[in-house]
Length: 171
Image 1 (cartoon, one colour):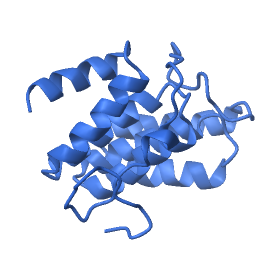
Image 2 (image 1 turned 180 degrees about the vertical axis):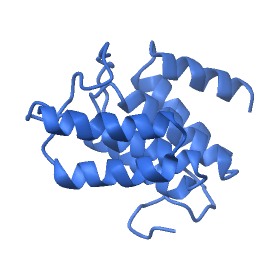
Image 3 (image 1 turned 30 degrees about the vertical axis):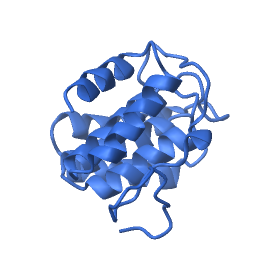
């Protein structure tokens, strides 16, 4: 467990990390981007050719199912290009790598960082959805429900919110 992450869901009895309180997640409507490489909420520096190539190589590894390789590549990308506009995307995909390899506690932290640090980014809604999925995988339905509800409240018309509604209906 990670002692630096506080449990915020009411009456939760789990020992895994949870996402920030709703006031830290952001309350703005989603600003959806039509491309995978940026969108609203991105950092100030535009993507350069070299950081874009590094990011795309990491994403290609993920899509080929090479999750450990992609995890290393996304982590390296964020260290090498900390000011890149692609950092929120890389952080999201790092969470996806962790989720895909069953590292749900670590995935929750990555998804929390996307939603908490970049609440207006096009990946924030998907990050909340995947945080809920991660909690569900850990058999913590209370926290899963809590973060899916945040998603529905903050991004009501988004595709991730629709998926969250489906999951909530199934609980």
